[in-house]
Length: 118
Image (cartoon, rainbow, N blue to C red; front, side):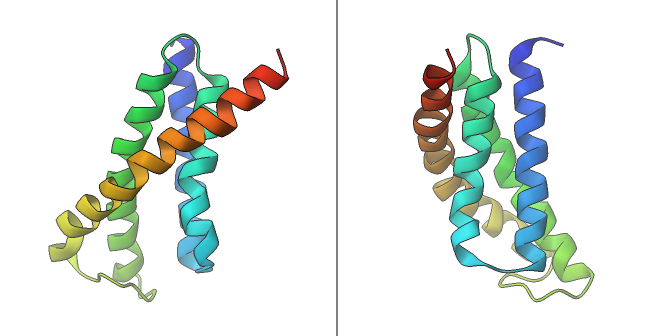
Protein backbone atom coordinates (compact mmCIF):
# COMPACT_ATOMS: atom_id res chain seq x y z
CA UNK A 1 0.00 0.00 0.00
CA UNK A 2 1.68 3.18 -1.12
CA UNK A 3 1.69 6.48 0.68
CA UNK A 4 -0.99 8.15 -1.46
CA UNK A 5 -3.53 5.37 -0.97
CA UNK A 6 -2.84 5.29 2.76
CA UNK A 7 -3.39 9.07 2.92
CA UNK A 8 -6.63 8.66 0.97
CA UNK A 9 -7.83 5.91 3.33
CA UNK A 10 -7.04 7.98 6.43
CA UNK A 11 -8.71 11.06 4.93
CA UNK A 12 -11.80 9.03 4.03
CA UNK A 13 -11.96 7.68 7.58
CA UNK A 14 -11.70 11.23 8.96
CA UNK A 15 -14.37 12.40 6.52
CA UNK A 16 -16.74 9.56 7.42
CA UNK A 17 -16.25 10.03 11.16
CA UNK A 18 -16.80 13.79 11.03
CA UNK A 19 -19.85 13.48 8.79
CA UNK A 20 -21.32 10.87 11.15
CA UNK A 21 -20.86 13.31 14.02
CA UNK A 22 -22.53 16.00 11.91
CA UNK A 23 -25.56 13.77 11.33
CA UNK A 24 -25.91 13.19 15.07
CA UNK A 25 -25.27 16.82 16.06
CA UNK A 26 -26.23 19.06 13.13
CA UNK A 27 -23.84 21.98 13.60
CA UNK A 28 -23.84 23.59 10.16
CA UNK A 29 -20.38 25.21 10.18
CA UNK A 30 -19.04 21.68 10.65
CA UNK A 31 -20.85 20.69 7.45
CA UNK A 32 -18.60 22.94 5.37
CA UNK A 33 -15.48 22.33 7.46
CA UNK A 34 -15.55 18.54 6.99
CA UNK A 35 -14.24 18.56 3.38
CA UNK A 36 -11.64 21.19 4.27
CA UNK A 37 -10.29 19.14 7.17
CA UNK A 38 -10.32 15.84 5.28
CA UNK A 39 -8.69 17.40 2.21
CA UNK A 40 -6.00 18.90 4.42
CA UNK A 41 -5.30 15.52 6.01
CA UNK A 42 -4.98 13.83 2.62
CA UNK A 43 -2.72 16.52 1.16
CA UNK A 44 -0.53 16.55 4.25
CA UNK A 45 -0.07 12.78 4.34
CA UNK A 46 0.15 12.03 0.62
CA UNK A 47 3.32 11.63 -1.37
CA UNK A 48 3.78 12.82 -4.93
CA UNK A 49 0.20 12.61 -6.22
CA UNK A 50 -1.48 15.04 -3.87
CA UNK A 51 -3.94 16.46 -6.38
CA UNK A 52 -5.19 13.02 -7.47
CA UNK A 53 -5.56 11.80 -3.89
CA UNK A 54 -7.47 14.91 -2.80
CA UNK A 55 -9.68 14.91 -5.91
CA UNK A 56 -10.56 11.25 -5.44
CA UNK A 57 -11.53 12.00 -1.84
CA UNK A 58 -13.99 14.62 -3.08
CA UNK A 59 -15.63 12.20 -5.50
CA UNK A 60 -15.78 9.25 -3.10
CA UNK A 61 -16.88 11.55 -0.28
CA UNK A 62 -20.00 12.41 -2.28
CA UNK A 63 -21.00 8.77 -2.25
CA UNK A 64 -20.27 8.54 1.45
CA UNK A 65 -22.53 11.53 2.12
CA UNK A 66 -25.36 9.93 0.11
CA UNK A 67 -25.04 6.57 1.86
CA UNK A 68 -24.74 8.06 5.36
CA UNK A 69 -27.70 10.35 4.70
CA UNK A 70 -29.78 7.35 3.63
CA UNK A 71 -28.64 5.37 6.68
CA UNK A 72 -29.48 8.25 9.01
CA UNK A 73 -32.97 8.57 7.61
CA UNK A 74 -33.42 4.78 7.79
CA UNK A 75 -32.67 4.69 11.52
CA UNK A 76 -34.98 7.62 12.21
CA UNK A 77 -32.68 10.63 12.40
CA UNK A 78 -34.10 13.79 10.86
CA UNK A 79 -32.92 14.23 7.28
CA UNK A 80 -33.42 16.85 4.61
CA UNK A 81 -33.61 14.18 1.89
CA UNK A 82 -35.13 10.99 3.36
CA UNK A 83 -35.56 7.74 1.48
CA UNK A 84 -33.70 5.74 -1.11
CA UNK A 85 -35.02 7.77 -4.03
CA UNK A 86 -33.00 10.80 -2.91
CA UNK A 87 -29.59 9.07 -3.04
CA UNK A 88 -28.72 10.31 -6.56
CA UNK A 89 -29.84 13.84 -5.69
CA UNK A 90 -27.77 13.93 -2.51
CA UNK A 91 -24.74 12.50 -4.33
CA UNK A 92 -25.01 15.07 -7.13
CA UNK A 93 -25.46 18.01 -4.76
CA UNK A 94 -22.61 16.94 -2.53
CA UNK A 95 -20.39 16.45 -5.58
CA UNK A 96 -20.97 20.09 -6.51
CA UNK A 97 -19.81 21.53 -3.19
CA UNK A 98 -17.39 18.90 -1.91
CA UNK A 99 -14.91 18.72 -4.75
CA UNK A 100 -14.06 22.45 -4.58
CA UNK A 101 -13.96 22.45 -0.78
CA UNK A 102 -11.76 19.34 -0.65
CA UNK A 103 -9.40 20.86 -3.22
CA UNK A 104 -9.21 24.14 -1.29
CA UNK A 105 -8.67 22.23 1.95
CA UNK A 106 -5.95 20.17 0.34
CA UNK A 107 -4.25 23.17 -1.21
CA UNK A 108 -4.47 25.55 1.70
CA UNK A 109 -4.51 23.46 4.85
CA UNK A 110 -2.54 20.39 3.80
CA UNK A 111 0.16 22.05 1.78
CA UNK A 112 0.56 24.81 4.38
CA UNK A 113 1.04 22.21 7.12
CA UNK A 114 3.46 20.32 4.92
CA UNK A 115 5.47 23.49 4.24
CA UNK A 116 5.39 24.41 7.92
CA UNK A 117 6.70 21.02 9.11
CA UNK A 118 9.28 20.57 6.36
